[in-house]
Image 1 (cartoon, one colour):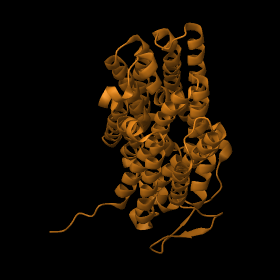
Image 2 (image 1 turned 180 degrees about the horizontal axis):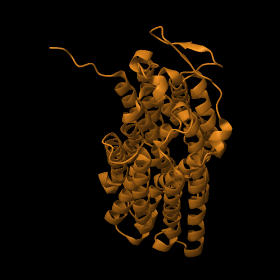
Image 3 (image 1 turned 135 degrees about the vertical axis):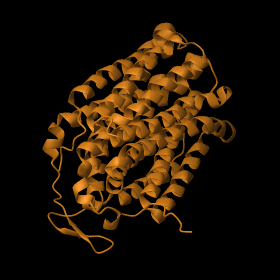
Image 4 (image 1 turned 45 degrees about the vertical axis):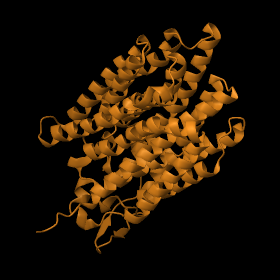
Length: 442
């Protein structure tokens, strides 16, 4: 009886899935641990928003350099280096809300390091994954973010309660170190034998770093020729690229506002304890995990069975996801119970994740050779959304508290959720008008 060989590209996808899970455990973990420490130290909401948004300044600075570095020296190596850097930072930095300068520098470093991760992942996946598997591969990889966030929301409040906020940093650093060892041992660049039609399809060894028109030797002795010049002007002036950028901004505005401020909404807006909410607080992120993978499977089915073209598949899933999410986001303040808030936030985040089968996979449709570069450009916009959204939300809540002396009224939170809701509607129309599923960069 012959054993069925497990394709190496599946292992790469699984490892990138674990990678995104660990990254989002770190992000949710900092929000939870810092909120507890800051509240105990009497830090106001505006100052909390500033510290929580500091991560995104570093993250924004390294998106495009991350795509460039992944293109030049290889996504596999860049991914490993970035993980080692942020894990070491978490292990060494004390969580003290009164040491603002230390916290700002630490969050900037973590942001810079993690900013290299997603452009590197897209470069790696573009090398390993054939076109007909891209939707579900990218969806599975990115769904790790949501499973990581759900796991963090479920487990980390108890860790903070029994071991203190600093224990979260140490746990995150340990997870980062373990993933780094796995990636170092099992990840590799794809040999040409994996993808005999790599050059034509836009993936495989033709994406490995070269200089000029130099031939690149690969593991089995084959070679490939590629021009290293990156068409920056065409990328930055492309309307389909800007359609991705706008939707990436909106997706991350909604995600980061909910990820950073949902714990505060539960505790101050609804007067609930995260510990007492049990497993229900993880449902919004678990829903993202489920819907992200549903979107990937549905998208690949529609494309493979020729039910819809790649272009119409991306537009359809993006539109459905963002329109439903907009309705759910604007409904959150209406429901004044934990069940209502969890339901609305779960629907909002779930359908946003479904929409990723539209805009988030589109990088590799239009520019498989430069997927890391385009991802870096669009993720810079997504990171700016984190800076703007998280900080703006803190200022909106501080203004509401000054006016009403309380954050328990729905009016205090209405604008917080209205803004991402309206952005979802606008972005879905932009994607309908300007996106394409055709390859536009050779």
